[in-house]
Length: 225
Image 1 (spheres, rainbow, N blue to C red):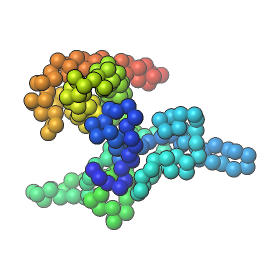
Image 2 (cartoon, rainbow, N blue to C red; image 1 turned 30 degrees about the vertical axis):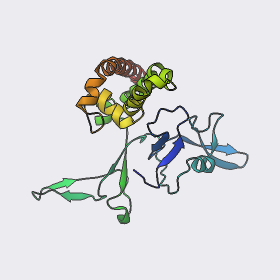
Image 3 (cartoon, rainbow, N blue to C red; image 1 turned 45 degrees about the vertical axis):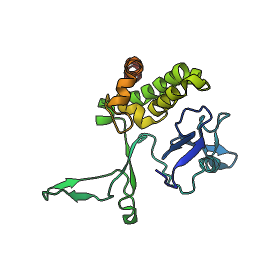
């Protein structure tokens, strides 16, 4: 929150509660392309450059963040998780028991207690817990909610309070995942909020689960020999 490393854009679709889309990381495939006698790094990122691949430095400049840490990973290590943790190899808890904390990316000591991003292959917990399928289902369900429930009332004076609540629910990925993916609650998505909107929440929980099932079947088919 309020970090100079956040990537920020104006929300043209008016989905975000504050009119700004903020996120702390952005991922895109990078290819080495031979151009005459030189090899250039080219990025494929339709979200930022819809017309086609662009030069690597052009892509970085588009992110518009004052401070930037970037890593180029092997293509198999494309899943990641970011959290604020001490960057130490060994930690002890209050009982003196030693817990191993072995991140795949070991940053310098001066990054201690900073944002650490760990990268994963699509296996073990990531595979068994369907990380990819859940992410795809979240995106698809969010788009469906926006088109069917938010967009029609964005400019209606009679429904501004409802639009604000819907933006809190769907315009913040943490709130959306808390309610629809995890069937849980947080400070904003408390019991009162969820009881107030229980019908629409129940409807889109079912849509999310249907989307999740579809993506699970699709990825299973792709992974078959």
